[in-house]
Length: 320
Image (cartoon, rainbow, N blue to C red; front, side):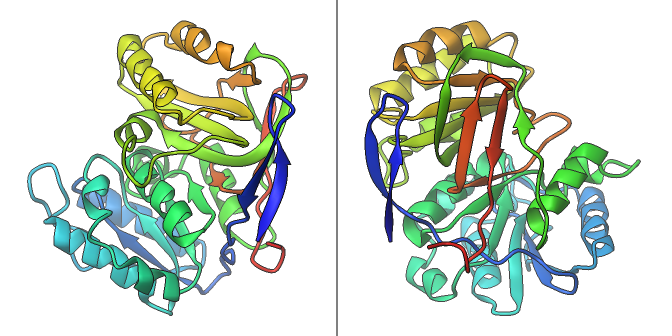
């Protein structure tokens, strides 16, 4: 089905409403897979225990502990794990253990028809998993969850999950949860905007330019974040998105964390302000701590008077 949404310059765009998966209940089974970099087995065990403490049954992909250089095993094995988990009718959510590198190598190896036939379920991950978020939106028409991963620091540190991160993730994952609005700390361009949230990690969005999974920002609120990238590299990647038309018609921009990136806000302001849409920075989303969760392909709003970018999750019964 389509709906019409208002863009930041007063325009209107028609977009397909994605299907929203059922949120989790205690007793549900979730599958941990490693579609990108190799996973620290100690962190994986801790992260799995955190999920089990939420009342979930945790199963692991056959090659989730594999290692092949900078990848968690061969491409074919990583793709097979992801697809098997997604197509298993007993699995309610597929959770990526960590990011790193390698997800883009899997996109041509997945049987999208089989995955579409499996029906909607939750995909959780961030960083390199941005490639899956883009592909799942375009090929499966699904809302997906951009958030912390169980073998990463905010969930699997020895002292336990970072409390704010964990509380937000639990609210986003489970039925009845209502995550609080996510607040930014700097308004680059003031205003109000609403639309469906898209985007994710900037490096991955730039890497997807020219592919079938390239981001299309028209009528959308675009999330951008990254880690360990110098401002000149951020400039180059944002310029690539601009020149590729990926930000054409965007309704607004929200900027997440920029851990170990120096001070990228001046260049981000320079490159994004000419779009003439609201730009809100400083959301604790992406990398760093806390690391809050946002549902991609769901309605969000920017209201810079109070600096929130709040996302409303809609389950499959409400996705009309």
